[in-house]
Amino acid sequence: MSAVCQVLGTTPGFGHSISHSHVRTKRRFDPNIQRKRYWVPSLGRHVRLRVSARGIRTIDRRGIDAVVAEILARGERL
Image (cartoon, rainbow, N blue to C red; front, side, top):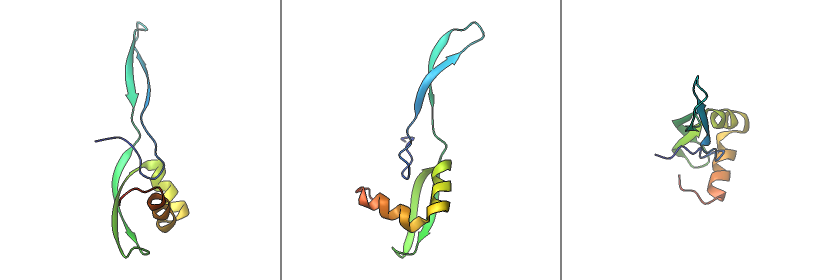
């Protein structure tokens, strides 16, 4: 499953793990993705989203209707 937030579009970051001997190996920093179910009054149904923890805060601030309208305007299916 891809580690991409449906609200913010946050994708994994890449970097290095650095050991005590300073040997560098590639690693991946995944966003904190959660599956969350929201009731959307404008659609009259529940919507299940894959959102990051920061995306959940964005929904709390802006409201689920505004966020879902933006997702639908991008052409994503819900």
